[in-house]
Image (tube, rainbow, N blue to C red; front, side, top):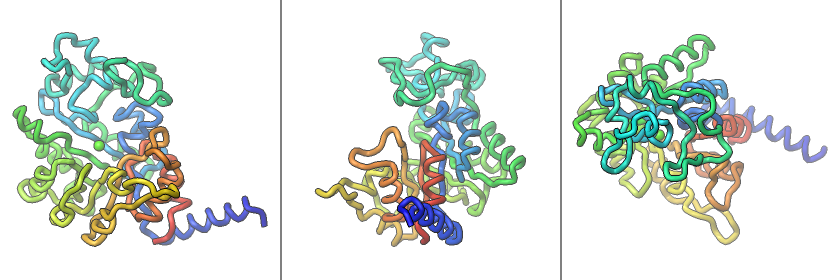
Length: 324
Ligand code: CA
């Protein structure tokens, strides 16, 4: 039997085993299918849905009128034409903040692929061309309605994965973002741990508050970017969203990934692991896309991945993730 046939059988068997293992890791579309369409636009979310993501991510910030806007930054100026449409509305630091604009004003902006403010050029040169077609920003409610609508029309059950952005900064500015996000989620039926939603945040104190003070029963994911107390996080969160470099700290002299002990600690505390971010066009130095996914899923045993390329991560999960 030739090598190709053997490989094909191996892949089919791997997929078969994974399917029947019943606990495949989840494929989380990071900002939608943002490798292909501008991040956090409804078309990028619809494409992620079509690529059969299991969960679709929403980053949430507030507008001046306390509406929940889906956008990655508290600033509008790296993904819209705000500087052109509203000259003079920047703060002293030269930046345009979503919190200084009403939703009605924000709806007049064109959205586009992420760009560098100083140079005006795209952050990812190979992605959707800047300023082409017509994209807009939208609210958390509108995105949930898109996903729930698709769940209705397709019979699938894709989850949502909202992130509360910069809650401490919002509070300093006189706005309390977490209760607003939690209320919207409840309005759309997301109230219990078994509902198809993970709620994520980088702010440790805020996520604890979401659990203890705001009495949120949803599955909470603590995002992390540096060392932290794993036991403490396990007291309120079901999992962590670590930076990939917290799990793979480097490579040995033979080029093999060095796995940090965070994964073992997380598992010992029963925490799920959903690392960020898988980008075929911005891989860590020294590793291929295939090897990175193999290391994360088959060596470290992560439970999901934030992916800019939900089609690539989906194919890997379905065909190459080993039975657990
Ligand atoms: Ca995010």
